[in-house]
Image 1 (cartoon, protein in one colour):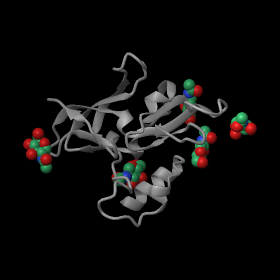
Image 2 (cartoon, helix red, strand yellow):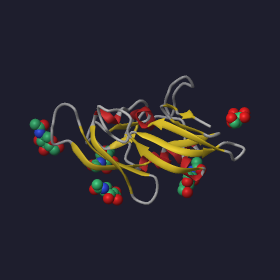
Image 3 (cartoon, helix red, strand yellow):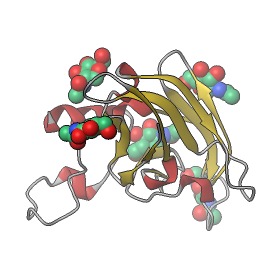
Image 4 (cartoon, rainbow, N blue to C red):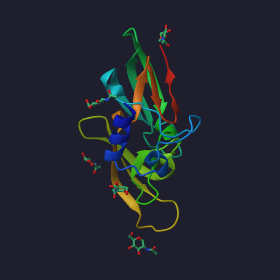
Length: 159
Ligand SMILES: *[C@@H]1O[C@H](CO)[C@@H](O)[C@H](O)[C@H]1NC(C)=O
Ligand SMILES: *[C@@H]1O[C@H](CO)[C@@H](O)[C@H](O)[C@H]1NC(C)=O
Ligand SMILES: *[C@@H]1O[C@H](CO)[C@@H](O)[C@H](O)[C@H]1NC(C)=O
Ligand SMILES: *[C@@H]1O[C@H](CO)[C@@H](O)[C@H](O)[C@H]1NC(C)=O
Ligand SMILES: *[C@@H]1O[C@H](CO)[C@@H](O)[C@H](O)[C@H]1NC(C)=O
């Protein structure tokens, strides 16, 4: 399962020395916990913005089934788990990655739970911009008993 997650992360272009070295003490944060495929047990999936400063759709909202199959309203702040690659400003899974600090617009893309943004590095080379970097949210968000989880945190669950 873990190998599958690392493979999935690899396909979206994450480069991380922590992930490249799985031999870590149990207490270490890395490798990232495995949370995937929330969309297979959630519906009414939507992205919306709450922070007036950024106005980016950085909150993921859905109706997710608990273990008994009952739907609950669930939401999670993608800033807990999505960041940018500091080489080229593309999106990647990163604990408390705070992608909102680097991205100027975001959207849903493609047919699966694909999320895209235009992002740039805050400092240095202004050519290091990604105009349409995408991330499949199913590769890093899971549904645990009706609550959305990602490597960087746990969302809230309603009725
Ligand atoms: C950014 O860099 C990563 C890792 O080097 C690479 O996999 C990815 O394709 C790059 N993305 C873009 C948009 O250049
Ligand atoms: C998530 O879904 C993909 C595509 O359907 C599948 O290949 C993968 O095995 C699933 N991962 C887990 C952990 O269930
Ligand atoms: C971003 O790229 C995806 C495919 O990777 C495409 O479906 C989408 O239309 C693009 N969005 C924009 C705004 O260019
Ligand atoms: C900025 O990055 C581009 C592309 O990586 C490179 O060609 C250019 O030399 C860099 N400029 C500076 C000032 O680092
Ligand atoms: C799952 O959520 C239900 C509904 O809130 C709760 O009754 C149950 O104890 C939870 N199960 C686990 C394993 O946390």
